[in-house]
Each structure stands twice: as C-alpha cells, then as structure tokens.
Length: 131
Image (cartoon, rainbow, N blue to C red; front, side, top):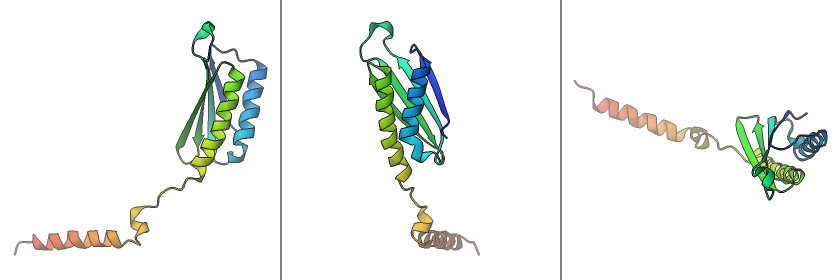
C-alpha cells in the first residue's frame, strides 16, 4: 500500500479529487510499492482566479535507498495535471529503480588499485626514514 500525502494550495480538495489522485498513483506506482517509502502530491493553483494553464501537480516519490524523484505537470484542469504527473511518475520511477548503482572502485579492479596505492605509500615512507 502506498503512503500518499496530499496537499493543496488554492485548489479545492473534494473527495472525488482525493479518489482520483489515489487511483491514478496506485495504478502508476503500484508495482513499485516495495521500493517506495512515501509519495507526496501537491496541487497548486498558480494564477488563482485568473485562469489559464495554472494547475500544477508536483509528485515527490521517496524511494527506499535514500533517493528522491520529483515529477511535475501543469494543465488548466487539476484532474488532467494529476493524470499527466502520474504517467510521468511511472516512467521516472521505473527508470530510477532499474538504474544500476556503480560499484566501489576497489572491488571493480579486484583491489589491485588499492594494493598499488598502499605499496607506493609504504615505499615513500621507507625513503624518508632517517638512519
């Protein structure tokens, strides 16, 4: 089950909007529930009552190994902005989850580089020893 926090600024949060957000995010991110710690959704009416393309939906997905993915969509309709952001969240989280983490340098070369560095340090230390 996804832990979804929904926040709003100048956008009315009806029960229908809450259900829409929950349904869209469960559909988009449901396969990643084991990797997601928290999802925060912020709906903002940028221009207020003036209208236009001004409903912004920002989704912040906190992934388990301390990674954060931020997705944003803007539309004149809040429902459309949520849907667009959910689609982008699916793609972005999938990419972040499948991305490989680089291995540490020492293990990539079997420790040979680290051994050479230690040998150089020991050689220079021996050269500077006074009789």
